[in-house]
Length: 177
Image (cartoon, rainbow, N blue to C red):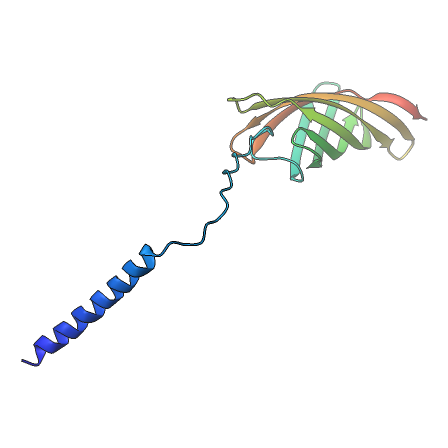
């Protein structure tokens, strides 16, 4: 007989909680002002990048021909100023061995690049321009130049934050020795 009261106590407790919950659900809450839901933000930037994001890139090139060998490595850091405009700082270092003459080349530059995202495709073309410094030196000579550079390229996004990039640029000497 002792087991029956325990069951009823447990059942009574369960009913009390259920009825308390039922009472709480039947009370009307204070009226809240109705606010329309915010629309989902429209993604206009390429991939998952947008205003304020940093972009870091690395590149390299090896050109070995009968005339000589040129080895180039570089890095770039960019900040998205808006969803399409990126300001980027790039530094390239090259080592050239041409006709038995070894030369060191250092070329830092700053560019502004406007990106043209295309909906539904991972390709993002861009175009821009910038300014930089060209320094060439070895044991015998030192040459420097300030240059302007138009740049154009395309990024292929593998996912929201990773892309391959192909770019073309040309260094137009402005001032130098």
